[in-house]
Image (cartoon, rainbow, N blue to C red; front, side, top):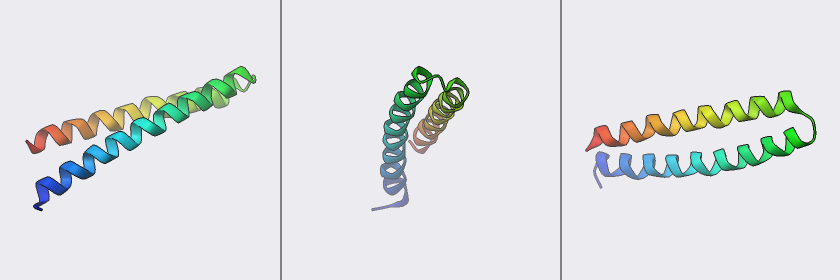
Length: 66
């Protein structure tokens, strides 16, 4: 397996992993929000956004390999 194949597999895995975590973060942020912990929830929602940005950057990296 060459470097491009390895990179493709790793990046695809990381994107999937990030998306799984983002869903968990968002769910937890909603729980915090519902419990009245709005500031903590806001920070977790920010983490969701940052995770999405990371995934988008990885998608661009993946596209650049092709």
